[in-house]
Amino acid sequence: MEGHQLKAMRPNIANMTVARCAIVMVGLPARGKTYMAKKLTRYLNWIGIDTKEFNVGEYRRKAAVGLFTSSSEFFRPDNIEAVKIREAAAKHALEDLCDWLKSGEVAIYDATNSSRARRRMIVEYLSRESVNIFFIESICNDKAIIEENIKQVKVLSPDYVMTTDKEEAIEDFKHRIQNYEKQYEGLDDLLDNDLSFIKIFNQGEKFLINNIRGHVQSRVVYYLMNIHVLPRTIYLTRHGESDFNRGGQIGGDGSLSERGQQYADELSRYIGGLNLKNLRVWTSLLRRTVQTASGLDAPKDHWKALNELDSGVCEGLTYREIEERFPDEFAARDKDKYHYRYPGGESYQDLVARLEPVIMELEKREVVLVVCHQAIARCLLAYFLDHSLEELPYIRVPLHTLIKLTPVAYGCQVEYKTFDIDAVDTYRPCPLILPPLTSEEKRRRRRMNSECTVPDCDCSTKRANPQYHSANDSKQSA
Image: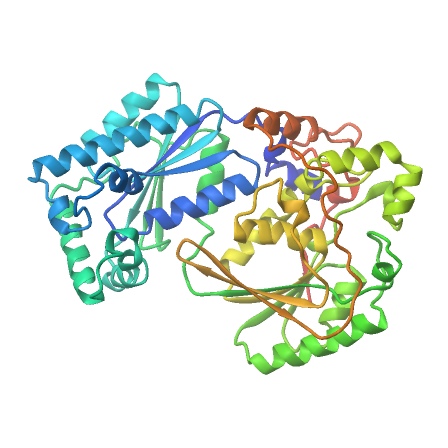
């Protein structure tokens, strides 16, 4: 099958009209629901689907200010007053979710939703608002996973901020789980066969998928089947300074400068000294990343998907030359850098679509060093650090700097190591103060900037640069 046809099988969200969808979490406490909800929110926003999470626990804490709502006693099914507070909080969150979906595209309703009656109420409520519904149930009977989740996440939550005894908090949370277990009804393959859902067993050990409808649900399933919660570390760096960097030129396939080669040597020594087990090194196909990684003693993969943003007719020019030769293009890019596409080249929006397979692979790996380019690093950092699409093109990624990313429960820790090797500063700050885009404007620009220029092409990817319509578009191993 042609590489172009393979691309067509994985549509780019850019040219999709997304039907409003509510993703409803289901599961006992300490099963990773909030972890998945936050990761999903981050992923969907990153690929351009306007998404927001609604955590019912936060609504419950606000509704019961002054009450001791962290105690397991508050979650007893026979605690009538507490049940009223919890139900009111759940309804309030659902109302806010529907209000938000009047302009947004996907909302994630994060709660236990532990009874069939509660879920049917949610279905009836959202159906009246013409919202598509997709359930995600996290099932875990592995006691070690549950225990670790309680220790690492739950006892550090706002519910236990006033509890000084960690062991006491752990025991109390276990009692809370027991209270939920008394009335828990999971999704049933027969009784709930009319619903759309995925059931995830023991954090990805097994999946059961039912009645998938539409593009968003398919993307969610694809993502959930690729993420893992195992400890991992991602190292990210740009290539060493290149001759093009020194000349102020963008793009191209230049070689390392003398200082760039010095960085490559120091990087190899530093990474070697860390004694990282199972390290894998990824580079683009471009000369400067391959040269930067050449001294690293680890298996290497060279990804075409990691190539720098294609500047089209502006490749090899300086920003001053672009402003002089193409003043209208220069001004247009300053007004909307994320969606702007160079004539014959790419936009940051295109890069995100190109990098999605890379993200899926990073989610599976234990230790990876990615040697890439400024625009590529910005897209990857925006995913892991939850930057908005407006912020993404202006993330600062200096040369000769190693970035360590350590995914944690509800986010990602980041550390920077700057090497004492001079390099030019390639950062160009946003020259304009622009108002945030509305959800409707984001969708309009997403569609406006997603037309494919390949002749006689019906590819749903709609990428403008013809080179990405060729075969062998993933990676080559070395």
